[in-house]
Amino acid sequence: MPPITSKVPGNGTGTLSWTVPGDGLDVATVYASVDATGAGGAVTAELTITDQSGVVIARKVQGATIAAGGTGSATWGLRLDDDGTGGGGGGGITLITSTDGSITVTNPAGPTADLSTNPPPTAVEYMTCGSGLVGAGASAAVAWFHSAGAALVDYTNVNAPEVIAAGTYAWSGSMTTLENLTAGGEVRGVLAVLTGPTPASYSMATGPTIGAFAFLPLTMTVHVAANTTFTGSAFNDDTIGHFFQDAQTFALQKIH
Amino acid sequence: MAVDVAAGFPQVELQPGSVITVTLSGVGAQITALNIHGYQDDPVNATPTPISPVSGAYTTA
Image (cartoon, rainbow over all chains, first blue to last red; front, side, top):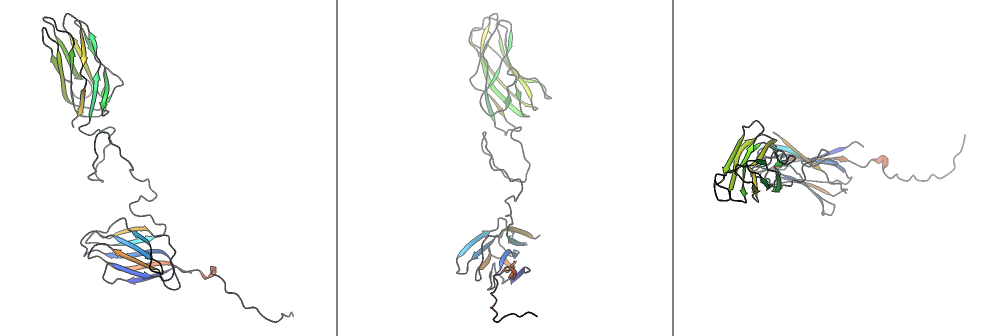
């Protein structure tokens, strides 16, 4: 037999019912025309089914709403996917794990960012640079190693590691010598950005010139391109060799 | 602009006397029409009614 459609006119309220007649009906779809022009807020439609004894046997709420002030419809259909479930498509994100702090989504339709190549500001990586003896009148490039925190640096070349993502970074740390300087002696620590479109920047500390250990604070703030190489070096102009030792926590922070 | 929303219909068997109700949340909204679409049992596949037996004997020409 051809399909049939039963029609129930509106009664001016937000509730309408229909009773399965005596000759039965295998329901395929239920369609409700909705007028929300007088609604005080977004409208959600809910379907409730009771059996012939009045017992509720099913309830199905629409996953999407009809905005106040507008009109629309709500349909329930056999083999029909719910709004917002993705249907047979590719699905959505099911898990985000952050090692750098919380993630807040304020506008799901806004621009996106790949956090693997664009770490968030405030990400910090702690690193150490290798210790070693630098002979009189000589210099040496130090080796860098990851210690803790975010992964901002590629250490494939330990003497010239690369900052992975573009941004503005601040380096802070220090180097020390374990022997007193001789009269007229001088040691220096240099932290430098040497590659990329950004002009080279560095900060340098000069140790005391006589009779003391040298403490060399090294700081640098510079904007760099992706894959920019940086280096650390120890220079010794003293007449004796000096053993340079890195600080325990040399920090690199992405500040913008 | 009209907004049309959709969802799956529960897979249940409805007997005569079952009731389908649609309710809107909030105050001020109303349902202007409710249409229920479906199929009644097909008589072709319905249980056949027994034929009354015929008494007497057939004759051939």
